[in-house]
Image (cartoon, rainbow, N blue to C red; front, side, top):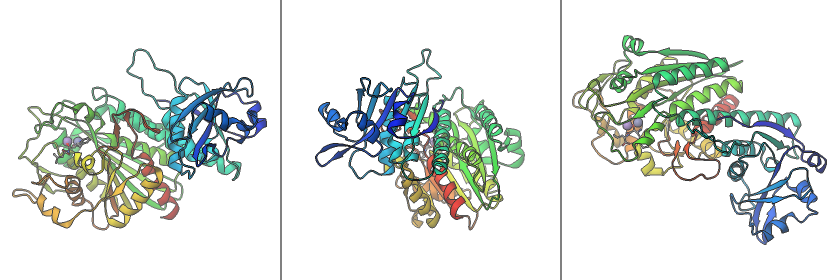
Amino acid sequence: MSVPKLSLSENTEAALAKTRAEVVVVGTVRGADGLELAAGAEAVDAAFDGELADVLTTMGATGKAEETVKLPTLGRLPAGVVLAVGLGSPEVGPEDVRRAAGASGRALAGTARALTTLSAVDLQAAVEGTVLGSYTFDRYKSEPGTAPVGTLDVAAPEEGTTRAHRATLKAAGTIAEAVTVARDLVNTPPNDLYPGSFADRARELAEDAGVDFEVLDEKALARKGFGGILGVGGGSSRPPRLLRLRYRGPKARKKVALVGKGITFDTGGISIKPAAGMDEMTSDMAGAAAVLASVLLAAKLKYPLEVVAHIPLAENMPSATAYRPGDVLTMYGGRTVEVLNTDAEGRLVLADAIVRACEEDPDYLVETSTLTGAQKVALGNRTPGIMGEEEFRDRVADLAQATGENGWPMPLPEELRSDLDSKLADIANVSGQRWGGMLAAGHFLREFVAEGVPWTHIDVAGPAYHTGSPWGYTGKGGTGVPVRTIAAVLADVADHG
Ligand code: BES
Ligand code: MN
Ligand code: ZN
């Protein structure tokens, strides 16, 4: 819920001799002849007379990915403990550092102050990984769990200036914090997080960050004809909302529109879902959370961009006032949709928000949602599906790979479009066939994107929410995916247009 305090530290024997950290983190790798120390561990090794690798090997450590071993320093350092964490193979990339740092973050629970030297290998990855790995959410526990690490000293890499290191630390800390903002929202249960309360929280966060905030309530939505959002939200006693948050940076050169699905709970509506696993639909607002966190991040990092986030919020419930299979909705902008399945609700609220976003002529449109179970069938739980206009889609997918969120480009095969033809309205919300469900949803969304706008949709149905045991920097519950991908897209557009 809260992020550790971060401070840059030197990584010399002199600095280590006076550190106030209780634990010093070093990296290990699995070399051809056994465990080796990673870059950054030299000063700690010196305190062990050059025998740290041997000591760790004696204890059974191998340097394999995410292995953690704690060692007492027995007075060799003011810090009482060395935490050795495995990076795996000696060809270390940023994601190896992020995952090892994540494992260290989990192992540091209960530590007031720690010093990490993984940052000597990759400063940004070490900070992101440690902060995200140490994340906990215990707001709903009567007894709080072990507290995450309170202060993290980050050892500076050898190359580069202090000024550059400070800037990287700030960016990494801000990105990690944005991920935790999204995780907190996803982890808040649906009895407390509904359209109205999401809007209230978004307003607070926007005010703190100096971001413009507007909200349309159900009356305003009806006046302006947002038939998709009103249709989906009509079954709930807690009415829908549409948020617009706008940040305009100094010398803003490009305008990026963001759209995120905010279904605060998805029962399926009248086309109700089976009971097993329905609780996971608390995560059906993960796209909204990511987009909210991203516009705040753009403001905090003062990107030279205009970033406008559009967030449709609704609760998809079955009731006497719910929309039905067979209904025809008139969407914002006037197009009509035949609803054949009320569980394909995300695309309906997104379509309204896409039309509104396109009215402002953005240079790019990035949308994200927990759109389809078909994303999980196609790509599993750790690989977002990225659809859209091909050139921009590939650019976003490359950036997603670089962040470690690992989104993958997906096609929109032309022959799937006619499956959405409706006998009654302009288009139907589902296709008559099972196959390619993510792509059918992509086709539906594409119909609402204005001509010529480079557009992409990131389907994170699986990746946004983790139900298994912790791995790397990902614990149970909301993961914050795809905040880091969106942050990377914003940084890339700020740099290259
Ligand atoms: N929110 C779900 C998609 C989803 C499924 C997210 C599993 C996370 C985990 C979405 O609203 C939905 O229900 N989609 C349907 C579409 C179908 C009716 C065409 C689906 O995927 O089954
Ligand atoms: Mn649904
Ligand atoms: Zn849904």
